[in-house]
Amino acid sequence: MIEDPDGSELPDLHAAELEAALSARALVVERILAGKCIGDRILEVADGTGRVLATVSLRSSVGI
Image 1 (cartoon, rainbow, N blue to C red):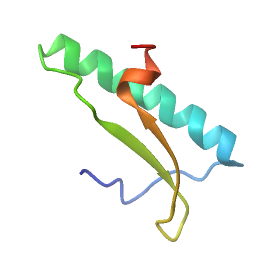
Image 2 (tube, rainbow, N blue to C red):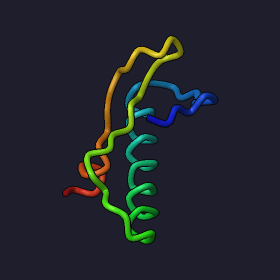
Image 3 (cartoon, rainbow, N blue to C red):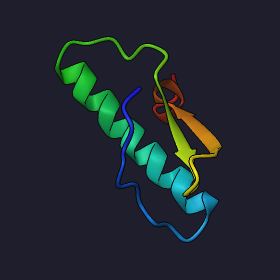
């Protein structure tokens, strides 16, 4: 797991999920261009205390 210590301040959970989906798509592109497998990786959307509120899989972000 790679943690983003800075995170992002977003207005609500929906906005955070959209941001995570966009980030997941960008990661998919990077991995494909590098010739790497997408695998079962996920991004977690967490609040300021670290509690996970949602997850976005790389596969679901591109409809696989």
